Image (tube, rainbow, N blue to C red; front, side):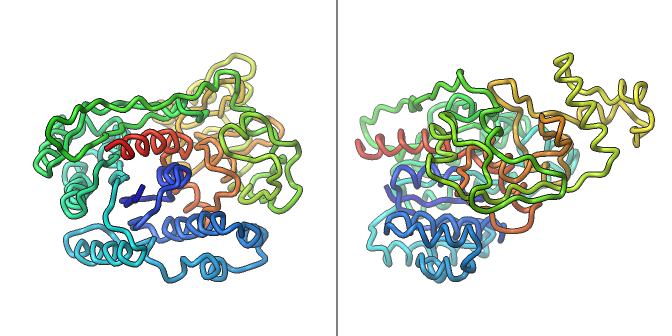
Length: 421
């Protein structure tokens, strides 16, 4: 299965396709830190196929540099990752590099194109934040380049993923235009489905629109794929967190033998931490001032004692010394605890790069927001997945990603469909 990955981000969706034994001829992404992450993950898969994961583990343990890892894994000078903005001016160069990569890998064609343009202009939250400027946002029209890649490489199928708000953005006109463009390009789509990550082995209530497209063929019977679901009803969010060491705000714990418990059945089932894996990385959290930590304590107590979310207005009456905003109505949803005793957390968003108030760790002993590794686990990223760049860049990459476990279920089904075309 030969795959081209557009608007790749850190590679959550492509991780699922890697697990389905896909061969990539390009990941195209604007964010330089996400591109470095993609290169490092490509290095992981290359070394795994060669039986040389000890080199990758040396990198996780900081024994070798990033460049040394990339060099040993044959990604330092490859075009598997293309750090370019997709635009009218860059399209010829990007397509030329992908075609050269196809030739270099002795491949004839692309089977599947995957990915989805940045979703800020389509998401309901993004629209609320951007207000009038949303209609002029050029990201509304990036789907046109996605379609242009379809007409250039003519894959058998494609996967276009985005936020549920895609269907309602611009009063539905963007989605209508997208469907028209796809049809003119020679592809058929069934009505897209809204999929929820918790149906696919992820302990998170994350929703995504998944559009599946086929290259039109005579007498072809189209049916939206039946993606296999995974039952996680016997697990709780705490199963994701309890083997990780306690952490102070602004601290970091990394290295061998740092886990405080053996792995568990959920972590193994979700491909997060294998039985013999014992290298902890990026268990790092942001610093917090004492006022915020006191607010976190109140938020955790409200949930533990009353199963309710902290109300900023009530906090103003109970602990007025903690209030920093006069307009208590505007900040009523600002603080949220990860519910350790529920089957799925609320959605992990890229906004966590700005502050951690919406992602408070449930342990009242720690009084902090989630670490990079904890956030990655809630997205079902494996513990051996390394995010390049500073802490804020890592959080942004995690929040923007498709959960790999969800991507894996999609990839398995698409591979079966491709094999039968």
